[in-house]
Image 1 (cartoon, rainbow, N blue to C red):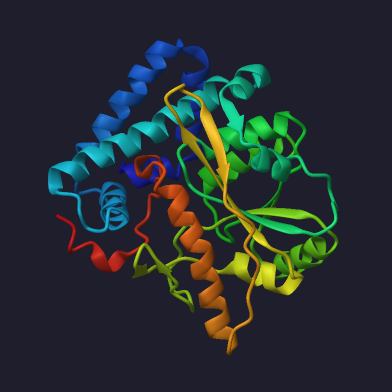
Image 2 (image 1 turned 120 degrees about the horizontal axis):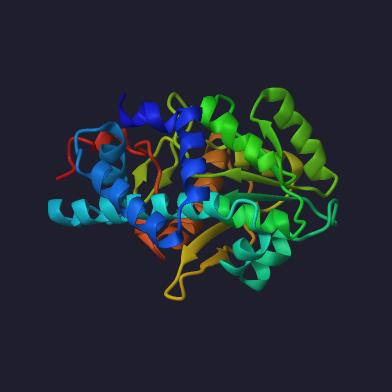
Length: 300
């Protein structure tokens, strides 16, 4: 069984949850480190190659082979540690809440009332602890309406079930659901979605970190149709060991010469804001698929 199979396995997720709930913190952190070391030691696997390529592009092509080895290990350890913490404190609102610090704007976004004036598209970045942060927000009674990928697997559906337990409303990105969300945004609701998960065979390839990327533009479509702004959220673990939630400014959609130019230009403005948040701690940003497949052969 390869790593990708494990990542897509509901059974593997359930085992990780069981172990995380029943082992002490210090042992859990040691195990998270060992898992990261074990995975990083297989540089030929698609997951490690993807993280390596993504980190290399984010660095502007500046990282050497040994520096990339360190970046991959650090990235994997951040992910493993964050998942252990999430599962260990899954049903402990007080402990989860103590691990998260929202800046004032981020909390205003998450805690806003339904239909609070103008709608808003919130784009989350795949930093290592975003699931933990959103669960802590849900325990604070934040109402979270999320748009997910149109196609999932057993592991993702299992994760969605865990999110729904604390009140998440999750809709897959089908044509009918996107049409529904446009109306809900027009009614003043907030929609949470991702901005940095790659998808193949897309019509547009906006520039991200200086290179055309395989990234979706559904968030741009929603914001344009509903005439609402976009804001980005990310979480960064700081020296105090807590996850600090940071946000971008509000980004209004701008008209363009034609539909294609307008979509790409607005997508790139949003991605520029995402770049700034990712650069706060590049190793805490982890996507398991290559955003720039064309660079895989260039990476040292």
